Length: 435
Image (cartoon, rainbow, N blue to C red; front, side, top):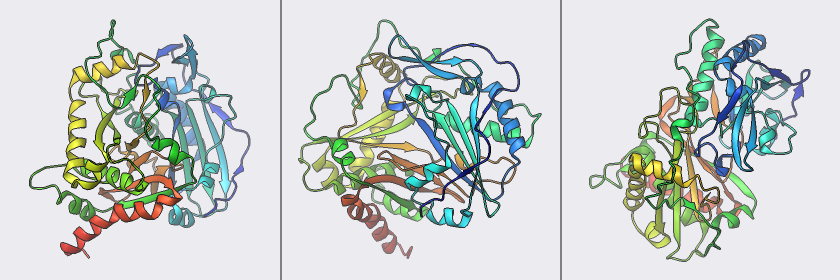
């Protein structure tokens, strides 16, 4: 469904913190300041009832006192390093109306389309650095419902951090005089690199040079028209996949679905891949506990774990092979020395995320994003504004044990990807009487 245009109400306004805030430069860690993260995380929420917008703006001004870096502006120092100029310039807030209904949006919400970009105010800027760290658009619907879209700079917050901020904003909307349940911790020096650098391990998810890859899957995929695909894996689907691994291998739902998605994706690319080609799965792992980050740390506290396999081993082997590789990659990021080694590696700005033969998975499920309640009930839908070549694991409203897999693939891959993603879980469910 093509989304109708939004009718803006008045000018876009800057919401300033409601009280004086510290004015200083905020150092961003090497985990924050990766080229790979130089974008805004864009969330779209659908609520049954619209909010009082004056109250919403008032509570945003109040929460920006605590989360004052989000009211600042990014800037570049030393030619490449990003930092936040905490200057209190404020977040952008747009109000709009559209004639579509909740029912129409919910019907089409499983696979977002490009026209949904209309629900987020587009900032005219020369570069990523010039876009305010926080942009909000509230769009009222003809049926009485509401869309809330936020764009939060990924160099300032990770997924856990954005969820922490949104819950804080919601808390102050419901109870303006409340003390925040979680007090934000701003300082990123806890993840400063060591001098001299001590890169003691191989980090397969990164490359320090620009070699010409044997096969550049990323370039191949981006050269074709992309189509969003979405799969909701119910608890019984996931159980069916897990049964392919037990009893010889105990595994979590994430490990199982990640390995299955990676395997299905490679199988769907086509028969042209060299059998010995090394392909990678990069997925986000929270390292807050590993390096003992303070409670309330909302900066980037995750790293990309890297599982690697030849095409033939991944495709021809059983699911256990992929799951085991995912588990091994996760285990490495439970070691503090390995994490510190990666932080040191990223001090070298020639180091880049190796995307040439990689599927990237970001875990949005289990972050509490779908639980955000501004006082009118939990959202009917929560998801990204658009779909991309990076795979998202999304929460399913009303079913904490289900997961929605969202990924854009070339048109030529869609049918094969759908077949491989659902075939095995369907067969397993049929055998166990789920259908």
